[in-house]
Length: 379
Ligand code: B12
Ligand code: SF4
Ligand code: SF4
Image 1 (tube, rainbow, N blue to C red):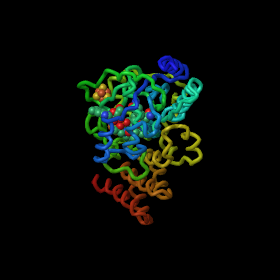
Image 2 (cartoon, rainbow, N blue to C red):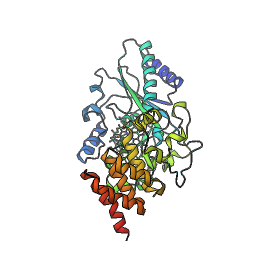
Image 3 (cartoon, rainbow, N blue to C red):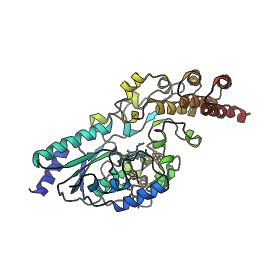
Image 4 (tube, rainbow, N blue to C red):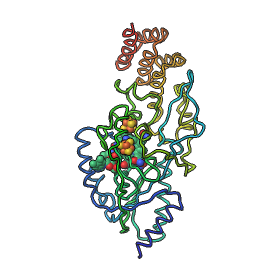
C-alpha cells in the first residue's frame, strides 16, 4: 500500500466533503500536556467537563492499541452575523457564543469524520480507527497543534493562520502510518491582549486557564452563580468570546463556509423576557439543535435573569416576582430575588419582603437577604 498516495487522497477527499483543514500527527505520548494536566488538576483549575484519565488523554495507544497516526480536522465557523437584532431598553437580548451558532458542531464534525472513516474503509478494508469531537478523551487542541492545524495562543485557543481561532476541532486515531505534518510556525510574541481583557482574570497567565473563573464554564453550571461573577457575565447566556474577539490574529476572520453554522439571529441573540416563561417543549424545539442547549433550560434561564439584572430592566420586575414566588427550582427563585434587589424598584423590594415570609428554602432565603441588602446599602 502506498500510504503517501493515500495521504494525498485523504487530503483531497477531506476538502471535497467540507473539512477546511486537515493535518496528520504522530501517536507519541503528549508529554508536555501530561505535565500540564497534572498541574491543572493539582491547582483545581479544571472544569470537570474533561473526559478520561490523564493517561488516556495523553497516550493515544490506550484508546486504540493499533494506533499509528492521528488525523486532525478543523471546520471554520463565522464570527459575524448578518442583521443582528438590537438589544433595546425594555426589550433586552442575551447572547450565545459563536461556538453555539447554527447546528450543534458535534453533529457536523462527527458526520465529516464518519465520511472520512467510510472513505478509509474503502481504500484499506482492514483499517482500524477511532474518532472524537470534543467529548472524547484526547485534547483536541493538543492534537491539532501537533498536526500543524494551528498554534496554541495565550487565550488557550488553537489559532490557525487561515481562519484564526474560529475553528472547531476533531480527530481520528488510525492504524495507518501517515507521515506527520510540521507544527505551525507562529506565536503570540509580546502580545498579551486576551489575558488583560478577560473579564474575570480566568487566564491566570498566557496559556493557563482557571476554568472555574472562566465565564464560558460559569454560564454552563446549574447551581447559583457565585456572587463574585454575577456582574461580570453581562448578557451572556452561553459561553464567552471575549478572549477571541480581542485577538489581533482574528482580525477580519469571518468565514461562512458551512450552511450548518449560519446563526438564526433570533435564537443566538434572543429576547430575554420570553426565556423566563419558555416551556420545556418550546425550549427543546427552538434551542435543542444548538450546542449551547446541552445543559438544559435551567442555566440559560438563570443567566437570562442575571442579564436582566445587569440591564436593571424594570420592565421585567413583574415576571421576576412571579418566578420568585412560583418557580419550583430554588436556583431560579433565589436568582430572581437577587435580580429584583439589583434592579431596585420599590415594587421589587416589597415583593421580596412578602416572599421572605413564605420561603422555606435556606438557599433562596440567603439570596432574598442579598436582594434586600441592595436596598439597605443604597440608603
Ligand atoms: C474542558 C473544555 C472547556 C473548559 C476548559 C477550557 C480550557 N481552556 O481548558 C471550558 C468550559 C472553560 C471551555 C471553554 C471554551 N471552549 Co472548550 N473544551 C474543553 C475540552 C472538552 C477539554 C479541554 C482541555 O482538555 N483542557 C485542558 C487544557 C490543559 O488543555 P487545552 O487547553 O485543551 O490544550 C492546550 C494546552 O494544554 C496548551 N499547552 C500544552 N502544553 C503547553 C505548554 C505551554 C508552554 C503553553 C503556553 C501551552 C501549552 O496547548 C494545548 C493545545 O493548544 C475541549 C475538547 C477536548 N476534548 O479537547 C473543548 C475545546 C477546547 N473548547 C473549545 C471552545 C471553542 C471553547 C470556547 C471558545 C467556547 C466559548 N466561546 O465559550 C471556550 C474558550 C475558553 C478558553 N479560553 O479556553 C474548542 C477549541 C477550539 C480552538 N480553536 O481552540 C475545543 C477544542 C472543542 C472542539 N472540539 O472544538 N472549554
Ligand atoms: S472565555 Fe471569557 S472568561 Fe474565559 S478566558 Fe476567555 S475571556 Fe476569560
Ligand atoms: S490576543 Fe494576543 S496574546 Fe492573546 S491569543 Fe491573540 S495574539 Fe495571542
